[in-house]
Length: 130
Image (cartoon, rainbow, N blue to C red; front, side, top):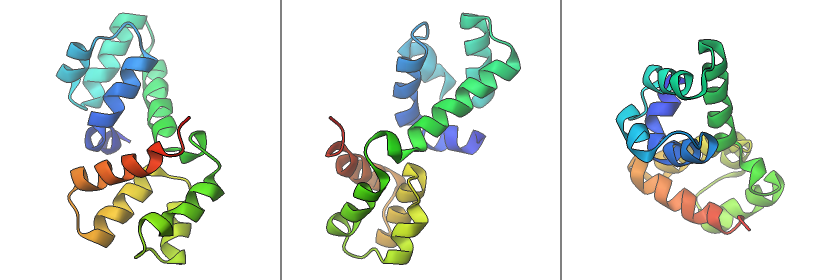
């Protein structure tokens, strides 16, 4: 889970800012995706135990990763080949409602950088957000 926080920190820090209103953007920028730093910050600001802060971080990552909160997963999956024609049925089934799996798949299929894949996936997903 730690590597996901580091790898997707630029998106996750905005989710964190919404989730933990007592944290500032400056504090989150200092965390820079470091799990231990975020755990300590949450413990200090909210008085949570280490276990509770870890659970909170895990929940944040799962919320970010779960495409089902954006729209019905089947509808998202139907739209994938329209946006990325090179995807096969096997690829689409592998995504299984996971934003992180989708990012990894697009990165590998199109030989893009992580940043390019994130930008394109986020653009794709915006159409499903009210």
